[in-house]
Image 1 (tube, rainbow, N blue to C red):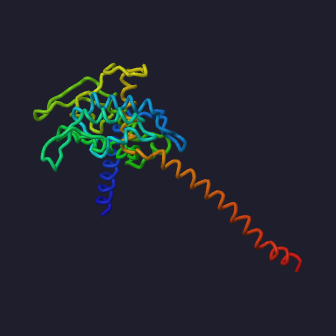
Image 2: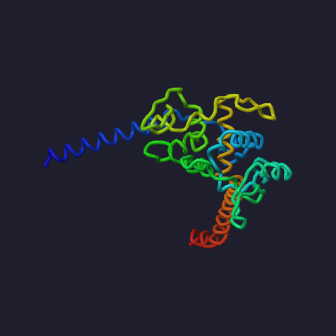
Length: 264
């Protein structure tokens, strides 16, 4: 009996150590990035979102889609803030399938971004959100809470952590990436640095391009983040005022009873 319990305990310990090692490997190359939208008072940087949109359009959209994002939202407040004419011109770069025509047609601002062009390329609409709170020991989100490390940092790390090493397995080429969970990823390095020239003259080094597209994908996953933060701030202020009023009201109501009790 004792021997069985000992073996079980050792097996559990070994499994836990292995899981911890895997988790450490997954987060070892993921570092915090000081994004403007982090924190309760943070906001998206419009210029950064426009640069990220350019990176996505010129590089990422060749394989990945944003099928949950309406093109018209590129002109919304708190987003990239494109003028209406630019949104219309941008939508014309894509073709979408129209069920009524049973054929492809030019996209309009009311259409969504096209889906992924490759079956094995994940859609990026919710990528930043889905990875936002799963960093830290056993996916507890401790790094997200204490260090601010979330989805955008994960995306930035993936794009900047290729080592240049490759290997082939079952006819598929894998690329070494120190930020990926297994250390090897099937996606070739999408960015090399200096891939694009930005209109605002911002640096186009690899880590800057990665941060810009990561910020854009965070907006794509959370386009109403600023509105939610504003609503949350208003709610907190209201609750604080309500608490003060309730406290003062309570003291006023019970004041006569309190002093009557003391006099007796």
